[in-house]
Image 1: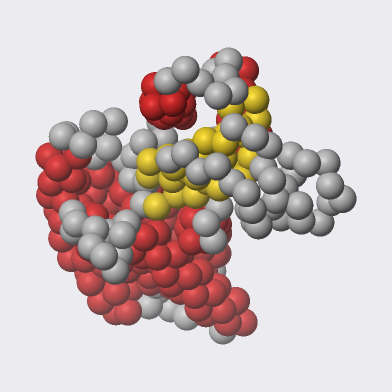
Image 2: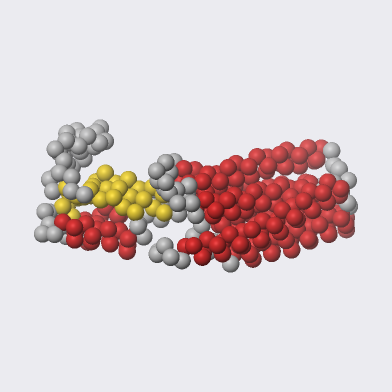
Length: 316
């Protein structure tokens, strides 16, 4: 992916995120006030959900903002990790709010509270419209690309279901006066929130712990390089992680001494870029097997992690 269209894409993302944030924050307030007055827990659950939405959108906005900042000597990757950190904090907030709602819902099974069905219905419908609007705004974004925009869209989708639930509960209460429909539905909404929160927590934590991007299989990458580039005999010391949306790779390749060193290096880089979309790779080429006593190339006893390189021929 060239770096040229990133800027306009980011600006588009920013405008959409800002609009979705405005809509969500406004209706969240409506739901909190309405839920409080109507005594409806399902509305409050939905508002809690919308609060995390608003937070998700705000963080995604800030993340897009930070991603524009150029790397410097102290932050050589720029501040791209902030987006991941934002997703992580956001996931934790989601889970905490959900627990509070569940606790309150269980309490209401023992002490049912009166609920104003009509008011609840009106606000739930308004909330649904707001959710549809922000979902539409986000889905026109390049949501597959960006963990944060995707997180935000996921939230809003959960919200849609939450608002539908609140509408159903309101109708049931208006027709039958059965107020337990309200806490029951707030529990269902909570399950939805838990699901999206949990997967968000997993993904962002994986990235914060320098996990390899799920899309790339390291073992396959090692085999592919050896098979497809004839001079490459062995690939080792592979480290793969992800910063923002970008995979970063460092590796050692043992090669048959090439006729043209730089051309071979170029081919390796080209292959990684074409095949694995890795733009940022650091390749260390070696003509002899790693000379370290515990390198995995010398069939020494296991246990070494191969980080002591003596007698290396560094061609970089």
